[in-house]
Image (cartoon, rainbow, N blue to C red):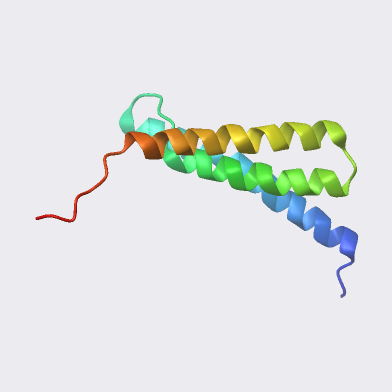
Length: 95
């Protein structure tokens, strides 16, 4: 069985949707463990990955609404990662 180019694009889009969905699964599990609502760093990484893949999928399908939404989302998630990284203290090499 040979997979067509269109089928590969569908698989690619489903992968993006799966990553995007997993953000909430990860967030839910972490919140249950801590017994409070939290947003783990992995939430933002999954968002960048999922939205990035979905952006290219939407471009391929010539969907401007979906493309714009995913494009903007990637920057929002990346900005959150930048803010998190900036907040963490830099470890010194001195003992």
